[in-house]
Length: 275
Ligand code: AMP
Image (cartoon, rainbow, N blue to C red; front, side, top):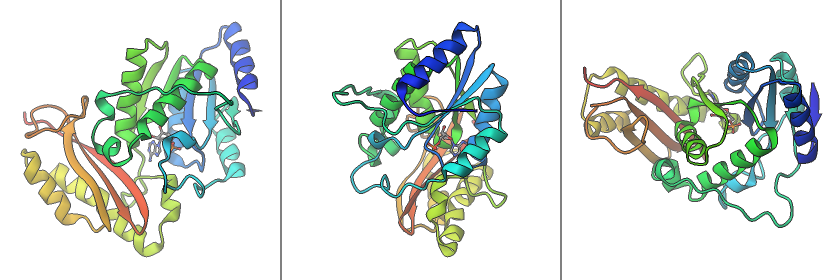
């Protein structure tokens, strides 16, 4: 497994593999890897000849007062997980933005609302780093987790709009046995907060199982089950466009973001349309 620590090394490695006729699979991450990340590696590895994982805590996607400075890190553990999942190259840049970097990729549509409203500028940061990473890695296929449903929609839109030659694949959301969506940020949760964090998935599962078709009533049910310190949003939206729905008349998704003991958590689940 190669460790590539700057953009030049990444570009050189990628160019050489592609010159050999090899298709690259790519999973971008911010590290502190868990089973959610490795599930994406397995998907990408099965769809490509060589697998590249990037580990980079992207400052552009953090707002003021967010957890950029204390984002959890575990380089040794991350590299061991990458090795165990057949990664050929880990891209581990110290910085991705050379002096003078001044381009922002802003995707409107799916960036509006939800996390786009509660974390202004977040998806500009995501789109910009993903566009730059795609330029450096030049993957044939890139895999993103459905855990970040809105991010996946933003990346799909960007790739379509900018005619980027990469296939975007969504990987299923991986949960702990008790239902908590795996996240690097779960590391921040004290035991009592972790128990309360379970109310996010519990609320989503109750909404799923309720048979209710009106979004307002679904959200009221979910809100009643949440045990959080602050709710950023709980919404029912069209699964594809992310626009709010009144009734489940097409494939829908319930999305939630909330703070538990100072940690911001997100989760989402599909809702079946009325048949
Ligand atoms: P992050 O390191 O949080 O930026 O996440 C890197 C990638 O892993 C993103 O595509 C996430 O959506 C994905 N991911 C994070 N947690 C999970 C999870 N529990 N299940 C599936 N994918 C995940």
